[in-house]
Length: 287
Image 1 (cartoon, rainbow, N blue to C red):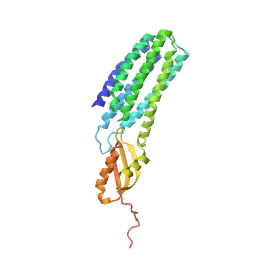
Image 2: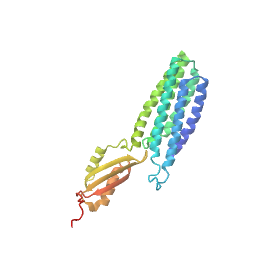
Image 3: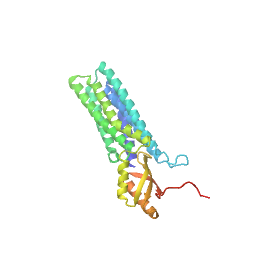
Image 4: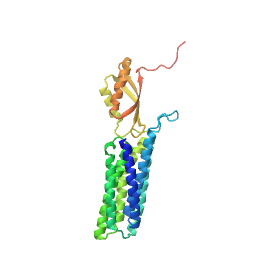
């Protein structure tokens, strides 16, 4: 499908570019290029993990894994966020070291290579635009690649500045700015991944508002409580609740209407338990 092809294209193009960037960065002693290559390496690994998670998500449920491997998409997004944070730390350490000991770099080469990066990252980010709001891993891929395009643009500026001024210190400064951009673009992905891995309520769903809407839109509903909402994967949301209805005899029709209302909020896996509203007397028969 479209997302699968987008991942493959992104992996191939970014792998070729990071190898080129690494070789040229080493030969020209450019920390900006090397730090960007390191970031791209993290992105390629992240893209590979995300693609692997999508393959696992299609594995059928079994007696041991009744939901299949859907949760792997959440775990992968968490791993990807962790990889990016490690990348940020490495770039910052190397940038600070080079500020203390700046060394000459070739501005023309830096600008040309980074310019190619702007085109590649911009194109691969565009491949995910249509689906970026449908899945956390796709959103993560889009954010990483879009950030890479901006970072490469910053490196272009670095190369131009070095070419005309000879200010070699701009190279590690750009490295630090790259680290900041990566951290900012990663923070939301990290917080959302932790939230979903702990079975927290997925972003965009507010329980109080959801309950209020259900009671307003479903006149047959007297009460709904013991509500639980969590992510089965980065694309599938589960919902369970106890409900009390006006007419229990019409429950099957009422249940279908409730499920339709919940599907408008992106909730696909729904389990509803009907309650009569009466208090259970558990004393047993009196003899």
